[in-house]
Image 1 (cartoon, rainbow, N blue to C red):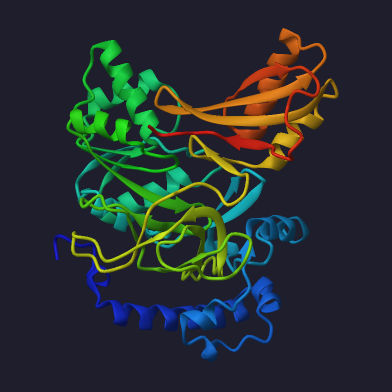
Image 2: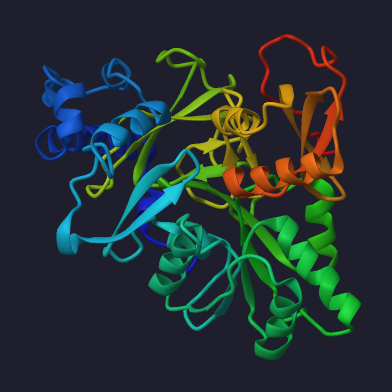
Length: 411
């Protein structure tokens, strides 16, 4: 079994389907008894009747906006999570703000499976550059690495020169973080004339991995794999050495629905990713991620038999993920409300010089350098990501209701 994390990955597909449907039924029953929010949302649902994909598809969707509103009324988790007291290890905060629970369970976010598929093994030294500040990304990767028996360098974000020198000194074989930051570290190491060549494998997430960037890593002898995970759901899907789509994690139930509806689409058709988590600590039922993807036909050449998705294909709403952080229209509006001098605004997200860029275009009569600096500071404080500011003449932005314009093209 050295090629696979466990036997679940090579189950006969029909057996997997039966077991996942039964697991969803059990999770619904559990949520009705342990999550007051779902006791209300799923009132009248009979779990024993959830015996097919069609039956599960009739359950209501849960959206992030609902979590946000219920958390305001019943903090910290809106009565979705049963965790409290000594069982609750962490409370994380994501932009919104939305609060997520962290349990004491080993490998709670299930990242060990993705790391194993990426080539990480017991005894490896892993440089983890995901954020440890409020958001759970750093802890998510830590939990997977520690479950595999790896040793972790908790690098976090920023301090590029220090990170490059740490890699040169300690010689980790693995990296976890965003792909753009790994390139930044390599470039900094080259500039300092030190070596970061100990890194032979990487598990990246939080942003796209376009072909030119993958080719850059291949040329440096680094095997890079992607995974798709969220703070609330944990691991959703992961890449293997086959590099043909992302294989769905074994401990979730995934559907693709037509955006704006709860209706399933045919395999191959692009739609919104909806996930039912089988995690008892945070039992999200038919949670609409807002991400777009599609089911790939067939199975992976790597031997794993679960279904695959094409990967992240954009957002079903205007929310954008920039350098690993979600940026919401409500945050853009909050920035604008701080400054009566500016009118209509639009956040333009682009891909420049192999990394995400973000520019807030603001209609303004008299845009001063002081105002530009103040708006840039507000972007950083509210969105937790740096952005540029560009002033536009009043009436020059389209009156089309668009707050975030994601124009990234990975070519």
